[in-house]
Image (cartoon, rainbow, N blue to C red; front, side):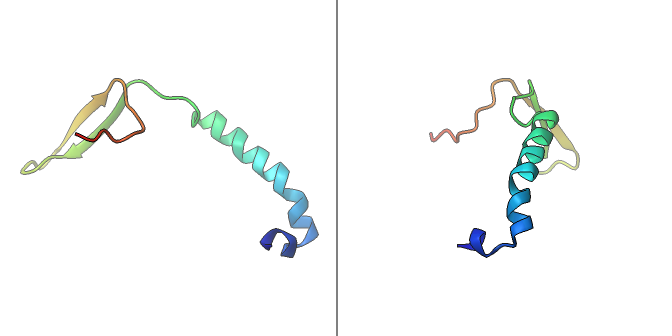
Length: 64
C-alpha cells in the first residue's frame, strides 16, 4: 500500500538504490565471517576490558 502511494520517480529508484546497498555490504564483508571474532568486555569488578576471541562463533543462542 505504501509502495503505490510513493511518487513515480521514487519507485523507479528503488531497484538501483537497493543494488548499490547490496554491493556496499558485499564490499564491507557483511556476507562472510571474519575469523576469529574478537571482542572486549568489562567483567565484574574490573576497571579494564578483557579481550576474547571466538574461533567458531555461532549466530544462535545455545540453551543449557
